[in-house]
Image 1 (cartoon, rainbow, N blue to C red):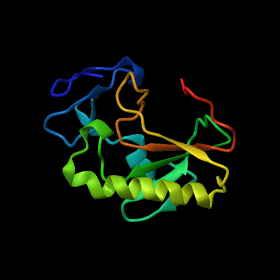
Image 2 (cartoon, rainbow, N blue to C red):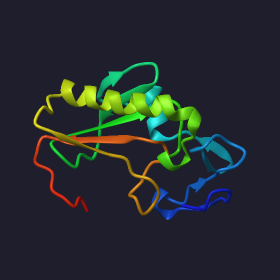
Image 3 (tube, rainbow, N blue to C red):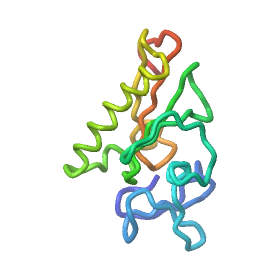
Length: 146
């Protein structure tokens, strides 16, 4: 991904250009058109997904490429590109996100334990520029994770 304030291609996303100025954080521009993230499209019901929880601030749904027997993503409806770009105004949203992640984990039967993961940036494993928390469970988790 490009440095903050600069636009540049990211070949992991098929050459789509991420743009940090002039549009909301996380906006994508392709051939001059602003593109919403896949998570925004799931929230808008433009892409089908197995949603397991939703309220006015977050949505949780099964990951299409699960890395554990249970792998759910919980995302804020407000488009925040990544945790590293969240601001003081997002404090209540971030707390809500984590509390609801715990609620969803209990709802889907992860009483023996689970792992919450938030990736930030290329080296952190981020693949979608929309803040999201992975809820992983259904098997013992090892350490270190990667």
